[in-house]
Length: 334
Image 1: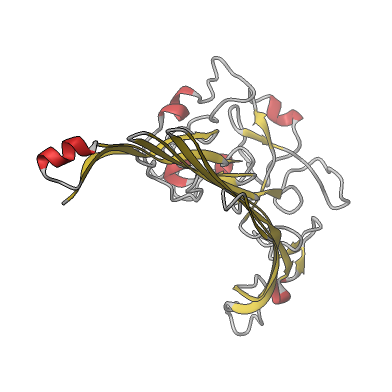
Image 2: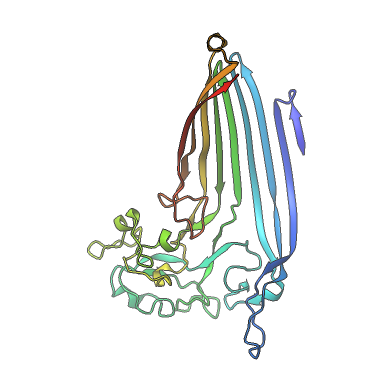
C-alpha cells in the first residue's frame, strides 16, 4: 500500500511479505557409509520462510524560515527453518535439525548453547551443583555454573551435558530494523541526521575479541576490572576466572548466554551541519555559491554491547572497534 497526502507532504507505505526459499545450500550432518570414509558434501536440500512487515513514513513542511523533512522506516522479520531435507535429524533433546545451528522451527544463524547461572564462589560448591563432568571435569571457583535444563525423560536429570542441556539462545538475524533521515534548515543553515538501528538480535564476542589471554593474546580493561576475584567472590562477575587459553578455548568459553548478548543498537550514523554564505559575500569573491560544513560519521551508538566493540558486527571476528570520523570542508561553485 502506497499513500500520499497534502500534495506529497505526507507519505506512508506499507508492505507485507511472505517469502519461501527452497533448495537452501548447506552441508547435512548425516554421514554416508563408513566404507567410503567421507561425509556428505554441500547440497540443495533446505527450505526457509521469511515473513514480516515493512513501514515507510515521510513528512516535510515549513514554518516561515524554518523547514524540515522526516523519512523513517521500520521492518519486522520472522525467519524460520521449515525443513533441512537430508539434515532432518531428531535430536535427543527434542530439537529437529543438524545438531549444531540449524533447527526446524527456529531462525537461521542461531546460537545454540548453555544457560549459565553465575560462577562457583568456591570449590566446595561444585559438589552441590548438578554433575558438570561432561562439560567441565575440573570445575573450580570462578568457573561458570551451567544449568541442568533437561535429560533423557525431558526433565532435569542431575547432569549437565551437551546432548540435553543446550538450547536456543537467539539469532544474529534482527527481528526489528529501523532508521530515520532527518533534515532541517533555517535561513542559511542546514542540518541533516541519519539514524539506524536494530532490536531483538544477539551477538557473540569470541576469540581475541571476547576471551582474555586467548591464544596467548592480551587482556581488555573490562575483563581485568570485572574478573572473578577469589578474595572477594561475587556470583555474577563481569568475567569468569582468568586463565591462559589456547585457540580451542576452555569450558568457560563454551557458547552460553553469558557470551551471547544483546546486540541491538541505535546509532547516529551521520550528522552534518552546513552554512551557505549569502550572495552579498559570494558576489564579492566572484563565486556562484560557497558552503561550509562540519560532519561526523558513527558519532555515537546507544547499546548494551561490550564497550569498544561494534554491535553491528556481531561475529567472532569483530576484532577492531568502529571508528568515529570527523570532517569539515568547503563547497565552491564557480
